Image (cartoon, rainbow, N blue to C red; front, side, top):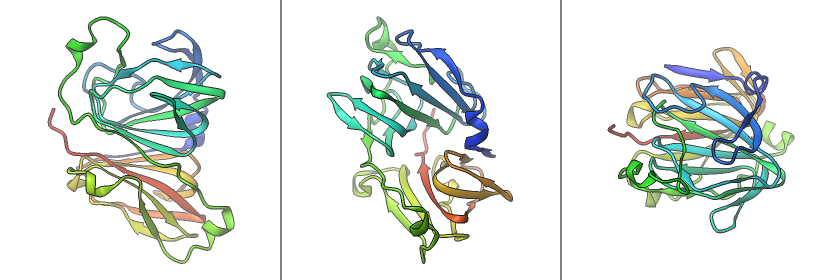
Length: 251
C-alpha cells in the first residue's frame, strides 16, 4: 500500500506524554501505526518526539530498523556529537545508541519504520536488555546537516538533483538515503520499491503533490515494496524531499 499523512494534520494530534525512559513530560505526535509496539502488524510506524529543554534519553535500542530525522532544535548524541536540523540517522534493528540530550531550546526527532514490529525501546540501564539483543549489522549512520534552499532558489531550479546522504560505497544492501531537489512543478520518478524494503518520502521544504493534494512541510508518504514506483511531483514553490529507502530484511 501507499500511506500518506499531511504534516499539518499530524501536528494537530500533538500531545503531552511522559517519557517511558525518564518519566519527564515531552510532546508526542503519531503519523502512522501505534507509537510503540511489541508485535508485528500491517503498515508503517512513524512518530515524532519533541524533547523538553535539557532532557536526556538514555541509551537504548529497538527491534525494528529505522531512519530517524532531526528537523528542529539542537542537542548532542553519544559522546557529545552535535545534532542540528536537518540531520538523518539510519539505525539497524538491535543497534544501541544514545544518550540523546536536548539543548536549552529542545530537540525534535522523528522515528520512521517501514513496518510495525517490536519497536518498544529497550534501555541499557535496565536489567535484561542483553537477552533481548539479537544479531544485526549494527549500523548507526549520521548524515551531515542538510542545507535547504531559499524559496526563490528552490522555485527556479532548472533540473532535478539527487544527493546521497551516506557514502554509497560503504553500503552493501538496498538501504539508501537521498535528498531530491525539484523546482516549481517539476517531477521525478522515485526508486523501484520492489528492489528494496520500500521507502519514505519526507517533505523537508516546499510542497509535494500526492494524489492531487498538496502536502506541506513535514508531510510523509510511505511506499511499500509491493507497490510500483511513484512519481514525485513538486508544488508551485518547488520541493526538497528526503527519499529514505529500507533494506530487505528477513524476520
